[in-house]
Image 1 (cartoon, rainbow, N blue to C red):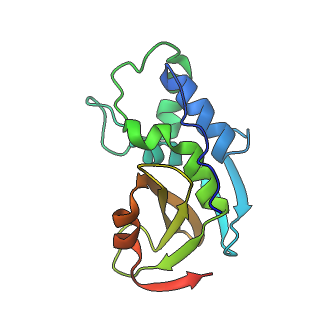
Image 2: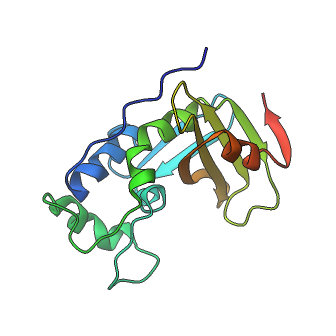
Image 3: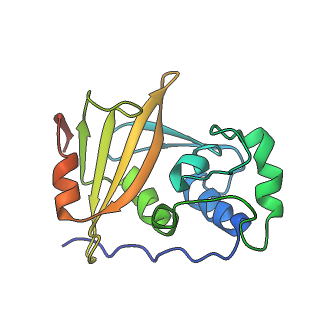
Length: 167
C-alpha cells in the first residue's frame, strides 16, 4: 500500500517558505544537514539548495543567487515575497520531496542528465500527482538534491531511464 502524500505546504511569505525548507531538509539546522537515503546514498543538503528546490529567482539579481547574500533578506521577508519569484508547484510539494530524498521507492542512475546523476522516484496514494521525482547530483564528492517536482504516472515513466540501482 502506498503512503499518503504529506500535506501540501502552506505559507504566506518567503521567510515562512524558507523555514519549512529548513525544518524539512536541514532538520532545523541553519546551514547544512547530512542524512543517508534508504538506497544507501549519503546525502548532504545545504541551505542554498532552497534556491533550486523552489526555483527561487529575483529579476534584478544574477541568475545564481548566493545564500550568503540573500539569507538575511529571505528571513526578513515576513510578508509576501518581495520581488522574488518561485515555482509554486515545487514549493507546496517540499514535504513530499523530503520524504522522497530519504525513502525513495526507486533510484535510477541516468548518465544523460546534465546537472544531476540520479533520479529518485516516490509514489504516494494521491491524485492527480501520485509521484514525486527528485533529481540528485554530485558536487565535490557529495551527493546533493538538485530539484524536485510532482508528477503523474506518465511523468514517472519518462524518468525511469538509465540503470535502476535501487531496489
